[in-house]
Image (cartoon, rainbow, N blue to C red; front, side, top):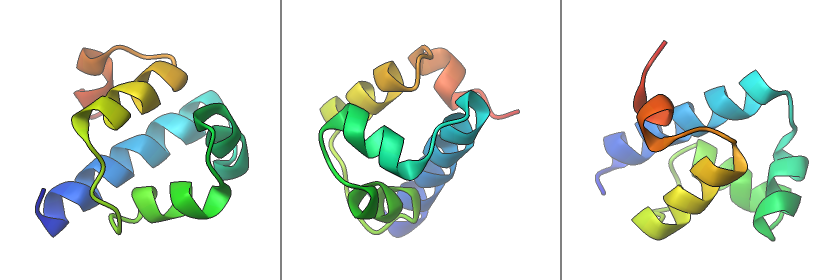
Length: 71
């Protein structure tokens, strides 16, 4: 993933997280990780796998189609 792609995915994750009203810590708890790791993902600092992105999308309670639908 390029830096720009990681940034865009991070923005989408943050947007969905805020839309359902959970904190980075709460998302981290649901994913089995910590707040710092979520912060790094949301800020495009970590190159996550598609499998992990799918897990995040499930935790954020949306479909992949809805996740990538930019409002």
